[in-house]
Amino acid sequence: MTLQLLVAGHTNTGKTSMLRTLGRRHEFGEVSALSGTTRTIEQMRLLDSQTLSIDIYDSPGFESAPELRDVLNPKIFNRRDQSEALSEALQDTEIQQQYGFEVLVLNTARQCDALLYIIDAREPVLEKYLDEIYLLGLCGKPIICLLNFTQGQHRGHEWRQKLADIGQHLVLAFDAVVYDWQAESLLYSALTNVLPDWQAAIQQLAQARQQENDWRLQGASFALAETLICLAAAEDIAAQDQPDKLQQQTAKLQQFVREQESACVEQILASYNYDPKLHGSQLHEDFANMAWQRDPFDAETLKQQGFDVVKTSAGGAGIGITIDLMTAGMTLGMPTLIGILAGGLLGARRMLRNIYLDKVRQATLIALADEIILLIASRNLALIKHLEHRGHGRMAALDSEHGQRLAFGGKINKPLLKARDYPAWAGYQSNQQLSSYLTMLSQSSVSQLIWQKLRKIVIESIAENKEARDQAVNELQKRIIAEIEKSPAEKV
Image (cartoon, rainbow, N blue to C red; front, side):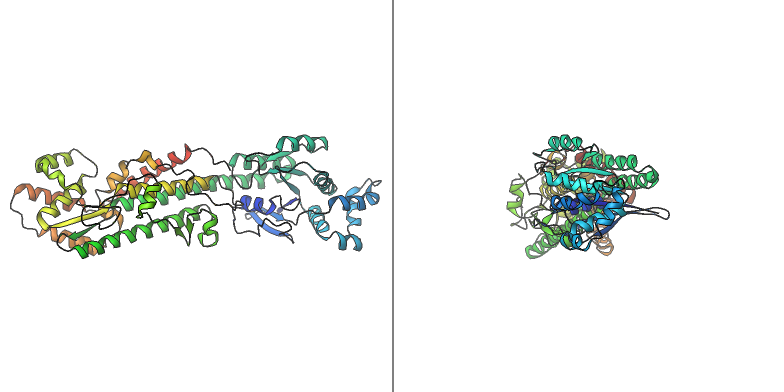
């Protein structure tokens, strides 16, 4: 059994955009500012189960409804069976030739179970729109009027009053641009009321859509949490007397960061059923070629986010790279530092690794500065917030400044600090590299007991500890979702 719905309306009222949003398919059909872009009937399957299916059809826009009404009225005015009279009239060759698109829409409407009439709520109520509803009403199918483009200034109240005057009381605000699950759920309730025989199919669709909404946020937030944990854990080592090697290792780490963020964006978009290859910069003015265009290590990018330019301490190895991390901590004394670690100070293991490398191996540790991690967190959080409220029918890009306040209150939180204790969580260094690192540490010749204890701590800090990593990712994901849920819906 297949439930069939038709989306109809005047040209350029957002019919195709509405189907994109309902179907979660930004690539469906063709959307243009030019009128008459849709010239045929196009099908989209909303639900496909073993026993029930729901199909929805896009249609060309009405253009000549007043003239067609004048032609049809004499043929059907005195007929009790107006639907049958309409069917006979639409078979007239002259009518088909002169009003081809209108005939196509009406014939399709007669075969469907219900009609969704799309209204651009910004437009004044004109007679031609009421004529379109009148013609669709002759098809004998229930009509639900959807007020599109209801964000900002619109004439929704005027439309509701005029529609009530002609007997159309089933009117809902449903925006194809700014997505609202409550509005979509009201549409399913309205369909259930006018199509009681299809209640099971419509409820199944509503449940599937609600589950998808939950999965979208879960998938996107998990992708961002995984990426941030990875970047917070990532680190490398370079000999202090090899500046060229330091530059190479820095460039390598920076490229790793770019690749990880690009993969994260792709996963976020996939969670919301967007293909970055197709959507590109239509999604965000700073997004093209499947990646953010503003480099996180660029000084201007950091300034625009509100950060001071991150400085390095070894000949400008690279913006955003922290070098000789907290070596000044040695002034506290080794027993004090080990005591701090024993007390569970998050991130302290990286500090001790760096001190040990500096003292015993004349090497330095390279890692990401807080500002880089917060920049990546902030702009991708803003992207998820935008997608949560973005209808798939929207064509305008999100500007770079919208919603880009600093993530997590501008502070590195517990899960990210925890990640700094475990470089293996990044997957940046291969197992072979980590094994070599362990071998290097274990073979280090140190006579003082305090350095031997420190070496033991450093070796332990390289362990993967997958369970702790999963806990950190889950905790960070919860914090990301909390940030998104406390953010108000975007208004355009």
